[in-house]
Length: 429
Image 1 (cartoon, one colour):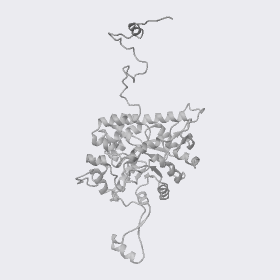
Image 2 (image 1 turned 90 degrees about the vertical axis):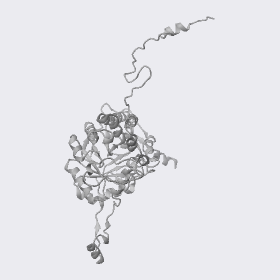
Image 3 (image 1 turned 120 degrees about the horizontal axis):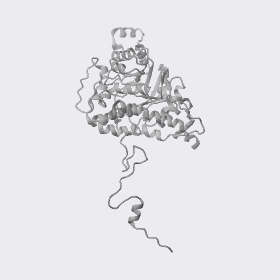
Image 4 (image 1 turned 135 degrees about the vertical axis):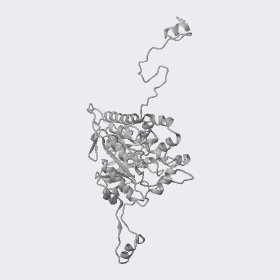
C-alpha cells in the first residue's frame, strides 16, 4: 500500500491560492455582464427587471398607481399566471434561417405584432411623458395607442415623431367632449379610435385609495371640463372618473324619455317613439376613423361588437384594474376569436411579459398584443431608451420563440403550436 501525503500548502499552491496573500484573479471568460466575485450586472435582461428598477425610482404613490390592480388583485396575478399554463408544441427540421415577425394591423405594416397599450400619465414616470414613449414606439416601427388621460396632448404627441398612432377614447356624460377628442385625433393624423368599453365606473383600486392618489393632469381635457374634485377619502382620480364618465353606454338603441322635451312627450302621446342612436353608431357619426372596442371578455359581447360594426376587438380586462376575478385575458381569447369568426381582427391586452407570451397569444388567434405596464416601467427606469429596450427585448424573445418552434413567419404560428389546460378536457370525458 502506498500512502501519499500532500500538504495543505502544496494544494493551495496548485490552485494558485495562498494562505497569506491571495493572487489577483484572471479576467473572466464568462462575459462582461458577470463579475468574478459573483455579482451580477445591474442591467436588465428581460422586461420583468424593469419593474424593480421602476419601484426604486418612483414615489410610492406613482409606482402603486402603475403597478396596482383592483381589490385583492387576483386578476392582476392571473393575467400573468394563465400564460404559464399554456405549453408550446415546437416543430423541428424547419428552415428558420430567416425569421419575419412583421404583420399588418388595420392595413398598417408594423415590425412585430407588439403594440404599445394606452396607459395614463406617462409624465409621472418621465418628464417627457408620452412624447418619449411615442418616439420609442416609432423607433421600434410599431403602433402606439395614446390614452385619453395622457399628460401630453394629442397635438404634442403627433408632432413628436412620424409614426402610426391610434387614440383611446372614453365616452363622457358630455358627449360633445368625446366627439371633439375623436375629431382632434383624426385631424392630427391618428389612424384609429380605440373605445374603452369596460369602465362605466372606475374599479376599486385600493392602493390608490390608501395613497389618496391625486388625479394627474389630463392635457387633452384642458379648457373642456373642470378638474376640481372634493374627495375627503379615497382616490381623487376615482372620484373624478365617476363624476365624468357616461355609465349609460349600451349596445342597443333605446327610446328617448318623454321627460326630455315637451315635443317628444306630445309625439309619444300619438304613438310616435324617438330613439337614441346606438352608441357605437353615434361614435361612428363623429369620425371617419376605424373603431376598435377594448374591454371584450365574452363570446356574447364579441358577437354584439361584430353586429355593431366595429373594426376590431381588443380582449382586455383593463390591466386587471376594473373588476377583480374577471378572467385572465389569455384564458378567454379563443372564446372571443371563435365568436368573431375571422370577420374582424382580435388583439389581446394583459399579462404579456415574454416573447413566448406573444407567441401563445398569436397561436390562439390574436393578430397582435398590447404592452402596458412594461412600457411604463421601462419609461420610469430609463426614459425613452427604456421603452425602446422593452420593445426590443420582447421582439428578440419572440424571434427566438418562432425559430425554436419552427415558425419562419407570423402566419406559420397556428393553434396546433400550443396546448392549453382546456385541451385536456375532451380526453378526460
